[in-house]
Length: 342
Ligand code: ASP
Image (cartoon, rainbow, N blue to C red; front, side, top):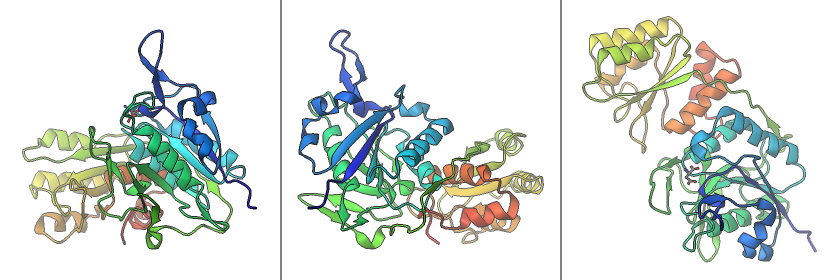
């Protein structure tokens, strides 16, 4: 008989791991050494589950490059010991962490699934139990020696998404995530239905991480009437390397002379300017309209159908690797981890 698959549960913080402290009545992280007392159903899962927790669990609004590095390190150090990984994470910045991890991990051959919940595990109507149990189920799902989903993904409310294709779109619904530009990887109903044609194959190469990240990245969101001063300030931040401009529709921006000249000067002085649309579905096609033609001509880098979360973390990753100029541009527009349609 095949031995049981093993899953490492990594608790970073967020609502999911909270229970009511009996003395104070406040919500506080529960002790992960007593995982089974909170989720007795874990005992019935076909996999062996072990858990570790960040020493100080955090609300995911406090996630930082250092936490991503720590997380990638935990996975790397335990990679050979487990068949899959489930990362419990606050939903607020989960899409950023999933994107960052996807760029940091090379040659994946095991599932890394992020999940969390809108309601704490210690609340009767929690969505956390189902999310955790099914995420463990998927993380330990193998067909012979092949894992079903060797990717960095997010599981939330019955759906499994490619992590770097997601954003959090709802602060109220249990179904909190969307992946507008890539199909779901799996759907959990009575059975778990895997959409195999959209899932990466395992890499035969040895697993590696590259956790170098550089946060000299800024985002400028356009809106009608935005002031010249604000735009100029964003284009001339001395410490900055990449400016992501959130444009309209298929990548359009105003054609005012001061705007075009400002971008041109910034690019000439070495700033990498990236075009990502404010529309979450679809993407940037520079040159379709007059209002984006100029941007393309000046060397603004198209983000294609990448989401902002993926564009920010990809920029950090490429800068972290020391890429600049045309090397950055070439890599940024390439499909590295399934984050962009090319
Ligand atoms: N603020 C919480 C967090 O992101 C919300 C959640 O856990 O879903 O950590």
